[in-house]
Image (cartoon, rainbow, N blue to C red):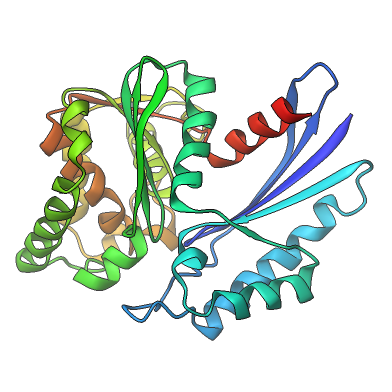
Length: 306
């Protein structure tokens, strides 16, 4: 048996998952920890990681070490996604991480991130035809799955944090700002020619903003085990009603909505906008949530290479 610790440094949160890998090719997650460090906060159009955001993230990475450093037969894999990928000062940050934690982070390309999302989600959900959407803090990954295969994939450089900052969607949202954000998204999504092939298909959802959408609805429906969202489904009408509910209230009231984490209340509208826009563009009638994504995709690849 081998222990594989995956440290996943996202734009809004840092996650660590420890999995036991068994000789028969199966695996079992034994620990998972998350810290909301919001690495992409304040990057702006200059794409510069800010000192406070870097400090928060490095402290989070340090806090993970007691969970895995004493484990036998250990392999640690560290990955970083959109915020580090886009940052002009990423080399400086990667050196700081290596010195402070002994983790050499691998910066995934957008296509790699989308592909690992596909591997992780499709293996667990067994879907044949869908559009996969992973909404992160600073990017969205889109994969058109056709007959169980990744027909097309792309990563686009907007997500919950940078959309919220750019269009002032954090507190009470003005109509002009919401309209500007929607026009921005539609223009960029229209440039992805193969999205037309995904019309009327269900959307399979990953990423923090989408998980939050699932939790809010499960809480409202009084479903036990709110966190158990894998395979959970919503209609497009239910998604739109939730979005409208969030738009109607300022940040202070939003923070009191059951199922919505306090640290995510200011970016949830920006986080839901890519989904809402795609549902309208593709005339899709439902969404399905996946708990499996990049980390599970990496495990799947690792096991196949052993």
